[in-house]
Image 1: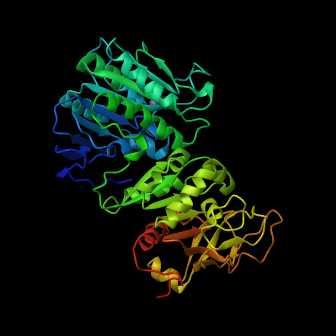
Image 2 (image 1 turned 180 degrees about the horizontal axis):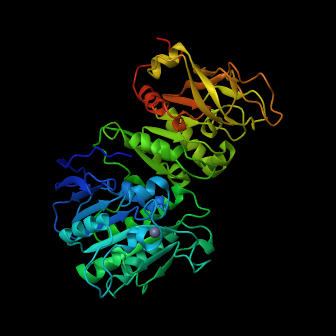
Image 3 (image 1 turned 45 degrees about the vertical axis):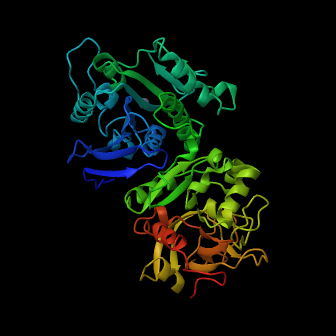
Length: 499
Ligand SMILES: [Zn+2]
């Protein structure tokens, strides 16, 4: 991913108080492969300087995503500085270390000056981050990580812990963060632990900052095994939210009600990554939208945000691939109602593969916001590259001159009109020109049937995509084009899209 980022300083008034906060950003390791942005939010009110880091380890995405969300939080006291994707080379390949390097040589979080040793960093990126940290003179340094197992169940991992070396003064603050995250954990065996005399790893940024900069430091750890990304991102957010609230740096509002500065003019997208979501769809969607920063923001969310109805902050909800039935079960009755209400009140819905099953009409658990039903109960048709044929409406809306294009297909729904009296008819934007029919699924029903559908539900627009253009080279622009259409008022009415 390339970051086109220019050092910029923009001023904006916050909507909660007379103070004006200033936001600036820049690049670390500028011009190198490791180039990664930092963001600084100054409240204008004297208070702590807080450095928050995510993405030190590339196989621990929740911290990077949470830090990317937290940098949008309105700061009312002190200064928050965020490096959300410290090691983006490792994040891009989803590995702990720099690509091609093993052991501590590849581990960015072992590259900082060691306790008692001379002040030495072990990679150019670590040197940049360390110089940057020294210049900031942080009072606080918190680094967001993930472990492979819950520490309470398996002490070999530090998953689901707060690692710190607390003093009498800071211990209650960390205990508060612990209580805040544990209030969200249902299973007793998954509860977080506070490891208050942890001596964080020698060579880590947090330990170096405590040793040499006099900062209060901590590492917050979620657990990446058996917990969905949306849940883990929220856990990080809950710990940080309580800590920044206790420091007076943010106002005491619920953590999931501050996804986005209300003054931004971009289209805010929530990408659901809860139970029933799998594969690479969410990551490719986030990359697509991240590369269009003037137009879109995208936030990973889980079932709690849907059930709490925090989704009203978004313009668009995306339900990616996986299992429609499991997504529905994870959302629960209340979550499903909130999604229906969101669309009915004017929000846009984009469902891809499983998310398209979820939108349709004919399952007990489906949302019934798209007037389409599946032609057969046998869904395991196979995974293959099929040909997508664009209709005239599809060409216009998705701004393509092509008649057809190859597209990745993975057991997506094969649909026909459901003719429900309660849902307006959909229009077909693309059909399947070819088909796959493995595992004794019926032959002949997929070719010619709708592959991309657009409809209405209440005031909102609903798009269902059976295949995976978001994961198909050459078609990743379709999702942004469809969202542009769905969020532009007056481009459609209840009779369809033809005017
Ligand atoms: Zn880590």
